[in-house]
Image 1 (cartoon, rainbow, N blue to C red):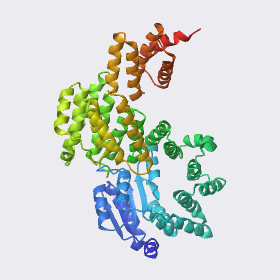
Image 2 (image 1 turned 45 degrees about the vertical axis):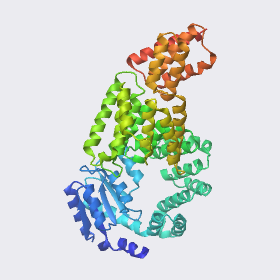
Image 3 (image 1 turned 90 degrees about the vertical axis):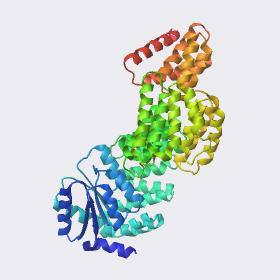
Image 4 (image 1 turned 180 degrees about the horizontal axis):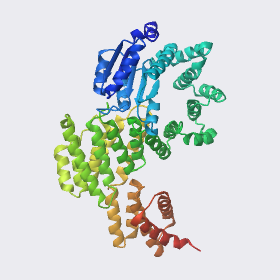
Length: 548
């Protein structure tokens, strides 16, 4: 089988080439260039839909794809689908085309590891020269690529070692060494990988060598030994993206979820098209009680999942859910705007997806949560009692949203029963499962201890404060901050209450740590306008107690 496939790269006349680009001039240029070097089978598609359709009809050995296929989906999502369906493997020659070279796009392309990247406009002679060189490499290293496709990483190392003894392949040694290093990491041979990559550092200064070395040490938990190197790699354009990604993984493995969240957000910003990374950002945002970050992550997923294999009503439902979560932490008029936007998303879901009727119960739950957030609890409760089943569904996110609506409506027994069911749904040892499991544990504890939304708790604190019930006001606002620690308004209220209690000489020392946390939040936040003025006022009054 290997020889048969390998022969395709020796004899151009046997190659099948697919060109996916919305510009027919690109089709003409590619056909002319490829026909002139003996390639006979060149198919062209103007959009991703027809490109995928052609892949279903015949096997292509070379796929040349525009990164931005404007008519339906971009190259990132197209390749994702082609890989998922088995049309593109490591043995396939993959070449990306683009007129753009901005950092975000280049990072996304690098992550996909194509065989080459051509910047348009194309010139036939350059197309021929670049393609010949790419085919030559693919042919000589075929057994390596084939072993990677089969996930036979021991074979990858065997073939790599053999190729490294071949003097004719010296120009390809860097590529061969990279595949060997990645095979060692895939085999979890981290100590051996460390020695391997460390040995390469003296000769090769490529980004992948540093990344491989760092990964091998991180997997051994030896982060302190490479602290300075991590700082350097985080600041270099060619390595910072991968470094943030690796550090996020490391911190998740060591249950430092706040640090993991900081890193994954940086990686997602540098390469925003990766849906799985955005999902990880969303999971970590929830775990860190960053409701705004959660909302932004789900919106990014929806934006980048459009027309991809990820696109589904569930994506929009998660935007709606996170929008409601955020609205329940806001005490000003912007909460109503968020709820209105959530209603618009529901209409969009019902309009744009033919199978939206299959999500009737999930949509009902979101509508009930919106009603409750708009202080129409009785309407919301009737809706839930008449149209929502206590039985858990197969999807964790659906069940989590049911938990929220039951809890928000005071139906806490139902909420806790559902949370127990969700625990049994989470399986596997992946890092994603770890984060979701931790989030469910957190939800279970907080739903048992705290019976109100952050906004409700803050409103209660304000009412207690106005009636000079300072201790209950303090306890309520502390719970609100536990659920929404990044809320500037909640921390302003906290410091006001603490200041009043201090003035009355009725403040216990154990509460001083909450004041310190509020001051730290203020210092780390970019504050403007009236918010900045309010913060300065409460800070000045509080800090005056500790001068002299």
